Image (cartoon, rainbow, N blue to C red; front, side, top):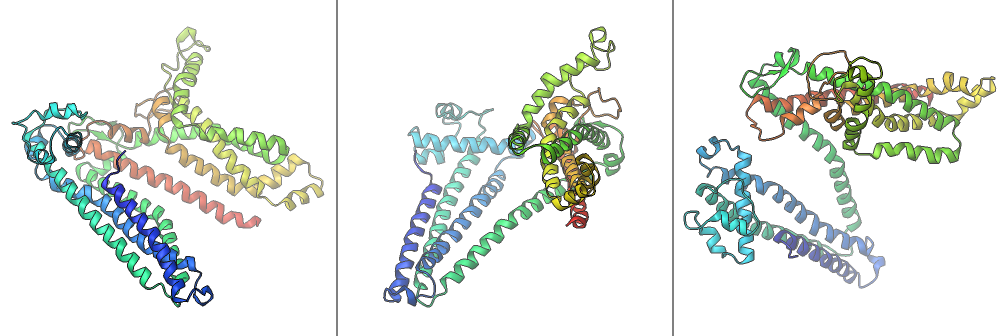
Length: 495
C-alpha cells in the first residue's frame, strides 16, 4: 500500500531524526578528541538533544497543520456554494460531505488512470457524467452532482494539494534546521543533559495539561452552543417548565425538569441495588474471605465492569424487562394477576440493570477503602473483647464511612451519565410519575435523540442538546467534587 504525502513526510522526519542523533553524538565525541570524560554529559544526551530538536518541533507543526488545514479549506470552499443549494434542504455539513466525496472520487479516478490530473481540475458536469465516473471508482453520492458542487470539489482538491505541499516544505525545513543547529552546538562543553531534561519536563507538563485543556474545550463548546440556544428559547421554560415536547415547528416545550426527574429516579433505583450488594461484597472480601477466595472472587466480580453497556441494555430489553412483565403485567397471566406494567421498558427495568452494572464499581472502591483502615484499630477492638462482626460495625465501617460515601457519590455520577441501558430499558417518554413500572426517559437519551439524523444546528430543538449536556456536566461535576471533598476532609481523622 502506497504511503500518502503525510506518511512520506513523517518517514523523512524520522530518518532525519536518527541521522541527527548519531551525527550529534559523533560531533560531541570528536570535539573531546574521543575522550568521553571531557564531555559535560554522556554521549547519548547529545544525540537525544539533536533528536528532540529535529522531531518534536517538526511533528508538532505537522499536527497543528493537519488539524487547522481542513477547517480553513472548508471555510474557503463553502463560500463558493450558492445559497440556493443550502436552502433546498441540505445543511452545511451535508453539502461539504458531498464536496469531499466528489474530491475524493476525482483523486481515486486520477490514481486509477480514468482521467488525468488536468482533466480532474477542469472537468465540467455538462461535458461528462460525473456521477457515472464516480460510481466506476467506488464513490457513492446521495444526490446528483451540481456544477457548483463539482467546482467546489475541484477547488477543495486544489487547496488540499497546495496545503499538503507547503506542509511538507515547512515541516521538513523545520526538521532540517533543528537538526543542523543541534549538531552545530554539540560540543564538549554543551550542557546537553540539562537541555534534554528541560525538554522532557516541558513534554510532561504538556501531557499533564491535555486533560485540563480537553475539559476546558468541552465546557466552552457546550457553553457557546447553550448561549445560542437561550437566545432562541426562554431559559425560564427550560429550567422551570413542566413538559418536554420538541416538534421542530417553533412552538416546542423544552423543559429539563421531566428529563431530570427520570434521570434521578432511575439513578436512585440503581443505587438502591448497587450500594447494598456492592458494600456487602466489599465487607466479605476484605474481612471474611481468605486469600484464595479473594483472589478468585474479586476478579470475577470486576468482570461486570468490563461488559459493554450496550450488552447491559440488551440484557434489560430481552431478559429483565420481560421477566418484570411476567410478574407485574399481562393481566390474569401475570404472577400477581393485575396489569401494572404494560411493556418491558420501564424505570424499574433500567434501574435494576444499571444497579447490576454499578456493583463492581461500588464493591471495588469500598474494598480498597476498607482495606485502608489501619489493622491496629481492628486489633484494639479485638483486645477489648469485641467480636468480628462488632468490630466491623463499630470500628471498621465508621472509619471507612467517608470513603464509602465518596464511592457512592461517584457511582451516582456514573449512573446519571449512563445512556445505552436507559435507551433500551427505560423507554423514551418524558413525564413526571412515581410509578417505577412506567416508561420514562433521561437527559442522556434526549441528547442522543436531538442530535441524531439530519439536524439543523440553527434550531432550538437541536441546540437544546447542548444545554442539556452542560446541565448534566455541572450536575455530575458537583457530585464528583462533593465526593472528593468528603473523602479528603474526613479521611484525615483516621490517619
